[in-house]
Length: 501
Image (cartoon, rainbow, N blue to C red; front, side, top):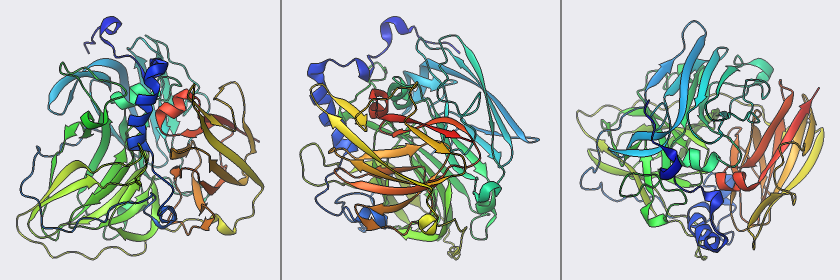
């Protein structure tokens, strides 16, 4: 693969912004990554998970599609219990929005290839760093060991080096966990993750399993939508810290692509918010989103919704039943109250065209896959963590401290069930993500939550708090928890947890 010279052409990373530029930059980010607490926060626990948001438009279909047909990323499948792939992490030419650009990528592709395996199989990734900056790799949401050459985010892969990752994916049912689902991979190098992910280094990881075999799901056509937000200049060079009114939303590297469906046909859509910072308040005009999974965790039953708020890093799987013949907008609805810098506008994502011979809609599945409800679990320990921000200079902190990879912030016993109260003293919403072990949201701003599934990423409201419960199963070792607005992570809003036997 031919790489562009980075010494003179590379963009300045967000971390190198001048102090005088910081306030302006923050205002741009907050427009997309914040919301007020003055209205509708209780909706977070009821499924909207945001402050004020507009109702789903139910108007007549739009006039015409605007983009080319959706193209799926390259798919690499396992065989004989393994999938072995070779990745080059580079900065150079890739195709985005139908033109050649210069950006961060895996193997010259944005997004990277889709990796498909079964639970109980092994994924091997030989990653070579062809950039002039450090990098590494994280399998987001995957319940695997955090040690050695597995999901170890403390690896520093220097320019020119190759590292052989190997992820032994747990067999479904071990420790009572459901493993199959929609995951994704991306760099997790502290200080560099924002630019590398925002530039395009991300891809889908699908572990197949029991949900895929259920009646009403197993024979459905699938669509994968990897959502990314970035910006390029006139010459096609990626721009970090982009201006809001110039941000492009890409779906599988395309701008506003078109998806086809027959009236009455049911399709399964797997959707990843692979943005480094953006919230997506997903809605499809004239259609409901029949949700079947969240963050690789199947729901216990289908949840039919008008809109789904996805923080950066979250994934959802939905069933779509084609409406009457016509053209419909898939977009992100406005959300956030009328506070300065905190109202997110509507933005388009893709177009759905319903056409051809009509089909009789098949029945939607009802019962899916149950999960262990931790509301009645015996708690071994309770903890409280506070996410905060300081200005002049701008700092993002957990419990008043910035990230230090050599410091252990939480020591946990293997097998323990814990309750964490996560407080947010800032005006930004902070998507909380923890590696290795998923959690169940128990409470939002003092209101009990009857969760539909476990999760690995969920937002903490501005000036609010959530309570989660989690079980630290199977794997000792060190890993991290952090805000998944990656600029916040890079600036220090991250902590280390060590699970000990």
